[in-house]
Length: 206
Image (tube, rainbow, N blue to C red):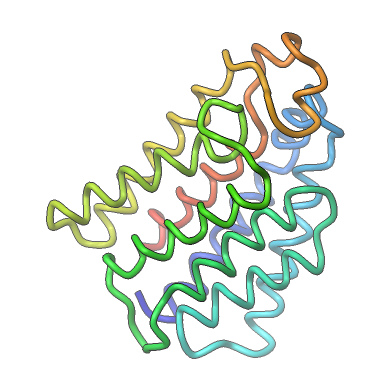
């Protein structure tokens, strides 16, 4: 992956979120405060604008700038969570023109750890981690098996989608949805859904 592909990833994520804003909003309205889709759409639109205004030269810089933009432009929990994940991933990458799939494994681990530190969630708590964790596992396993970026990203996207779907029967234990108790069962977690979109965007451009 080079900086151009990383920018394409953020642009594809913005496009996917824009197309799915209404669905993400409906998911959040059912168990949250109904602003997840709108907030992420605004945030990733700002990310694309920031990257186009002053294009970074490394993948590391692309992800750090994207994360910083999300933190500064998105309210609620999603800005800090997604922003921290991208910033941590970017900072974990070497400052080189290109990075390898193995570098991205380390970066994705750093991003997940940032989310865990900030939100305190664990697998099964009905959060974005339930999509991110399986995606990372699939990506890492594919890379360990010799897969290139496209194949590993495809595996991650499939695992993220399955992980998001698997949040439907879970009871939320973190975030606003946790206040609903058992009433949160039967609804897909909006954060897991949007995380799936971001991994699908990576698979698309890879």
